Structure formats: structure tokens, C-alpha cells
Length: 250
Image (cartoon, helix red, strand yellow):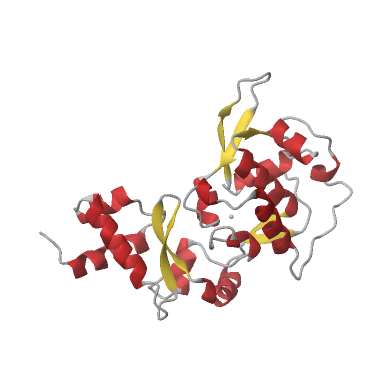
């Protein structure tokens, strides 16, 4: 049964809303039973329709697919709501600095990150792995065959990036991270026993958690604005609740 253009738009909207992960063009075309050019045209039309002022959400391409996100002008209201029901993902300055190195040098090993940062990042890497912002990428063909690390799909979703080509320059990333941590809470001083600050650069991660500096809240947002605006946008499920049925990675 062939759908009318209006039915196609309605079905497409429902698919993107229901998807936990960004819906890819292939997935959408198969679900709608249409060719990819037709699905892409429908996506473009749906995306433009949500750019009008009466909508609090928009359809954005991230991590190779399409997903609903709250608009920037409503981030303050959404952030207050999300904070009232669930703590946001928090990252310390050491974690943000290490994440930046991995993002721009990937795939990269822990010893290479240690050399760049001048400290042991074992605990921070463990934290980033637990938060699913990075993942392993095999082992490097070198002495000891150290583990390689790269950013994850969740990293792209959290920072609202379609792919790594959308990353800002490293200097801009560091400035945005510094701005995020320079909020009302400020940057907490390093504790004397902080493994991240005091241990010499070494090999693979062995510390339970090397984070003790000031922290920043990171939630899905507009590209690198997710760093600079701290917790500016919610996760997919949180967005659905916050936007009462019209809305769309700790």
C-alpha cells in the first residue's frame, strides 16, 4: 500500500521519535518501504518543518543518523527539568583533557596519552570507558602491544556530532572545556593523593578512578556546545519526557 506524502511524513516522525539510537537512512527507507532518495527527501522536509518557532525540538543528523533534540533556546528549561529527575553525566577537567587527546589523536594508546599529558591517565581512561565515551580499537603493533583507544558512537551522540569531521580545532575544544569548568562551581583543587596528578606517566590503566578535579556536566547538545554549555540538552528518553510527546549518550 502506497502512503501519501502526509502519511510518509507522519510515519517518519514516529520512527525517529521511537528510535533509541539515531535512525539511519537505510533503516528509515526499509521501514517506510521506499527508495533512499525518497526517504532522504522526506527527511529534508521533516527537518525543515521543525525549524519553525512553534516547535521546541528539531530533527538533527548525528552519528550517521537522525534524532530529535531540544532546541538551544529551550536548554535552560530542559536542563532544570532533567536535573530535577536525574543527575547528568559529569566530567572532570582531567577527563575532558584526556578525552580531547583521544578525540584528536585516535587511535591512541595510554602510554602515548601519558606522554602528551605528562601524567598517568589510567584512572581517567577507565572512567571514560565506564561512561561509554571511548572504546578500545585493538592493539598497536609495538613492544608490549598496548591497547588502542578511540571515541565511541556515544561520544558523537553526546556532543551532537554527525562524524569526527565536525570536531572543532583542538584549541577551540580546550577553550570550550575550560569555559565549561569555569562555571559557578569553579575548578576544584587537585587532592594530594590524586592518582591523575601525582603518578608518573606509565602504561595501561590500573587506577580505579583518577578523577578529582572540578567537573562539568555533559549532555547531548549542539556539536561542541555540549562542552561549553555543560548540561544543555537531555538524552533521548529525557527529551521525550521533557517535550510532552513531540521531543525525540553517564
